[in-house]
Length: 113
Length: 109
Image 1 (cartoon, rainbow over the protein chains, first blue to last red):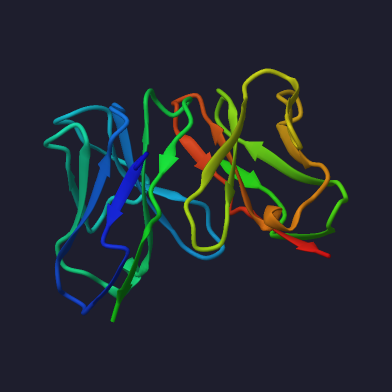
Image 2: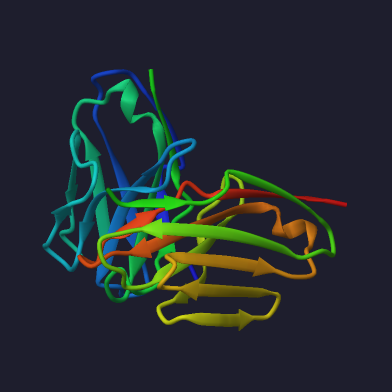
């Protein structure tokens, strides 16, 4: 059971560089989410998707873009990385909306120098 | 604004019982989740309460009082592996999930 798989697990970027984080789920879930987790704060929703081909903004979308071209994949892009984007990024999926339990990936630890 | 309050850190002894509290102020309410997160790992689902009362799952129980905006997670017969952060999250009237910062539980032998 792979569940939700995130790649890469660690990455160090320089300010201004771009990168894409990949999330893949094998549970045929409709909903997918990208969060960031910072010390002393709750999980903050960046973007989410309610199905293939759809995306929507969450609480902190600035500086990020997403795509959901295939149901099983949800990509998070940083076009021009900034030190404020240093964080742990979690992808999650659920069968239904937010009233359903979410299944999380192991996270991507991203440092922007 | 919307807010979830839970203690930052708690310490308990192996074999004992601990109660982790969570209070929420949200615009409407459509349920409350508890997740467990070991250090450096992903959050994992523990419980979901939408009606008042206590729900038990083995050593873990979760309680909800909608009138008081209050929930707690009760862990019995504590084991060292229960050392983790416990995240409380409430669903508001717009079906947005509001997350607390988590309670770090330290278990001592």
